[in-house]
Image 1: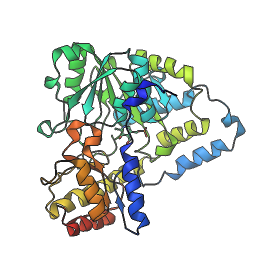
Image 2: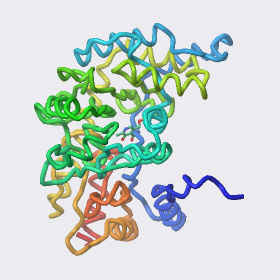
Image 3: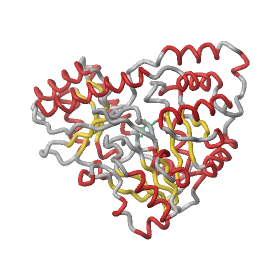
Length: 386
Ligand SMILES: Cc1ncc(COP(=O)(O)O)c(C=O)c1O
């Protein structure tokens, strides 16, 4: 059978081939430090798990949900007010099955074939996959060291800006770990107004920012609500990655368009998960702050520890990732990644898998405690690879 041509655009998942190599080494008794995939190892708070299990005990909650519960939408609005100082109404919010799914389907609601969308390079891969599904045309804006790994609007040609339907911005950024500097969202809003481009902000890591800086929401910038929407995932802040809870929030016409698409293919989020989301949003958030300190200790162990063995990795500013330049003796991030795994037993992700501007770097996920990160660096040092 000849399957759809669009599948030809999707290559083999990089994590799958790395994982195969890891399993092979483990089968030979090797200790592997897995710093590749961004799945948090922290626990889901008890009150969230309890809300889900209690709701699941009620057979009524196993029916089609058909909608987002009004109390869930209210909980999101109250959280946005309290956490980010942003006022939104329930009609500006819809749930999605994680940002991965939401951003993956977004272009289907917003784009016709050939429409231009602006995406960061390197970027979280589903930004690109979503545009391919809708046969939109991605135009990549580089996140380069020269501009602190931040969007640099002056580099986007006028004709591209005029043709663009939307631009995805995501800070703190995966994989590069940059965070919003003061004023950048205001500049993006002014640019979006000038060229009539929708801004889609992916806010997955607002609670993982280091050195005393507090993360926020793009929608808090003046005028952002006229030009933007934001994906707000609970995955990383509350360690609920498997429950698939995220929201699309902001400009109502955009939220309505995505709701219309969604209503054709979905009957709503499992009610116990909606209850768990309410518990997360309305419950205590001390753990979110404590966890950020734990991530910072891991960041210090990795970046500081690497510098101590003469691998010059700058401190990451936010997200749960470290963006590490590969040694000058290497020209390929994939080759370096494989050598690091074979010689030191340390697994990371090649920067090139996030886009051409990712070449020359590898990404580490901060998913092991500081002691294990220190052990991993000791293995790197002993391997002589740096
Ligand atoms: C930038 C970014 N957005 C979204 C996600 C996934 O969010 P969710 O679990 O809500 O799909 C990730 C996960 O790694 C991410 O790095």
